[in-house]
Image (cartoon, rainbow, N blue to C red; front, top):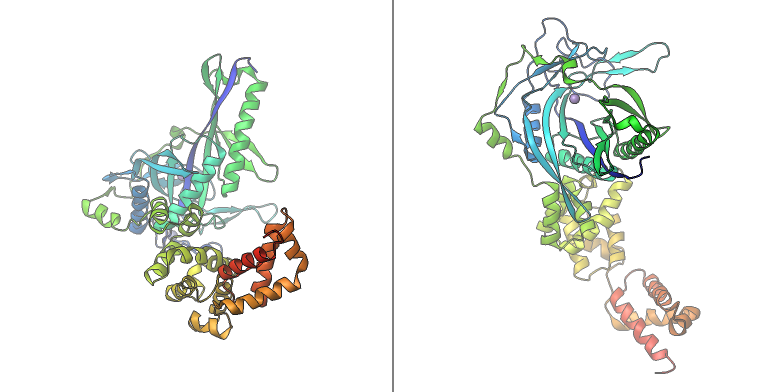
Length: 495
Ligand code: ZN
Ligand code: MN
């Protein structure tokens, strides 16, 4: 390694393929289905039979424009389709219909918020294209083909090389998935391969005051956020090491290469030198008419643009005084954020609603692998639970038990509180009796609370827990705390 060399930074650009949530394929009427019997969703168009003519899926185009708008892109008023030629068995036409020099969206940006900082990631372009089928290697000695996926609409989003770390790329991919599902243009399911990531990675190295760069590697077809982070981190290290081993590494013209991620070994592996655009022999598809985008069309699509996750998060913090963490959790799914606002519209106080949504309802939903909107408890009843909690009719622990009962009963939460004997007791005399019982039964804790500075806090907490227990969860925790403090004051020998 040269003496005055500094590893300046990692340079990362991303290409992301997003499967759009359409009923049918990009250029034919075949259904888009994930788990259909092999080759059951095919027709002459997506099988590439001679003479079959493609017709553009207008819904896919609208979705792509909506995504382009959300990414602050300029939407092309005139766009067209191109053939990208390559021969692979999973692409029976021997070309992919894509967009080359006139993509439908370009020159956008996405403001990535992380730990209070905002980094603007420029979006170079976004275009529509069709997916290929799948090669299956399950049977030894042969390759099987399933062409159900061939022709599925894909939105390809390309960023400028503005990302500078594996963690940042991870965060960007996560936010992009959130954006796409918010817009409703994609299910964004990793399990179903609906988002695939291809990072372009190289490293800037300063040698004797001059900046040199390692050749770019494109890591192909990553299908999880985790793989994006690991592969980029590995690749940056590998390039620095390759340069350390070979002083000529940074000299002269070196070709970019395609690499694959080996998840088992945790390494990237050389696949082939990267193709240049001319290798694909792009040319306009004569079977498809160019698309003219009118003002009316843009206005109609823009009307579908919802409030996006980042501004919504900020609004929740400002308007409802949510913590950043709770706002992040609630906004992470559009349906959850919508539900939150419905519960508030139904009269739930925001502070209690947010806590119960995050700590109670979302937990039950996760336990059942259901969206929170399908728990069988509507916004109105969630608001009732939050209201009786806010009014002190029940305490927080009781609210958890009532929430659980609400999953199987349609009775109003106030009624369930009565049935379960969980109506909070605010009566000081009754509470004092429970406190006395707890003190009598737990002498050691009382001693610690009085005389052991290291254990005093925990001991008082323990006593509070005992009172809540003997009251069967009905005591008012604030009152209990107050009475316990008073009782300890009285018992202190020096007062
Ligand atoms: Zn078809
Ligand atoms: Mn592509």
